[in-house]
Image: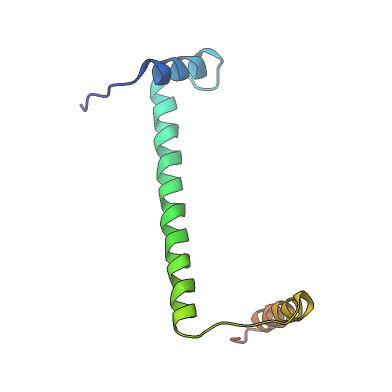
Length: 89
């Protein structure tokens, strides 16, 4: 089994979670913390991928320019309608 060293602050936090009934035991606290960490790492990886896609689009000239917020909103509505109709915008 892997040995885990916790700071006094982390130990107190875990104990408080068990004491107030949020979790049944320390293992449940740690398991939930690891699940949340894993979820956050997946979200950050997805955001990095989307950011890179956006940067690639800008580099390739796949951008839209608008003269007003109304013009941008009209384009967004048009793209939304096209997607709902199954068209590729």
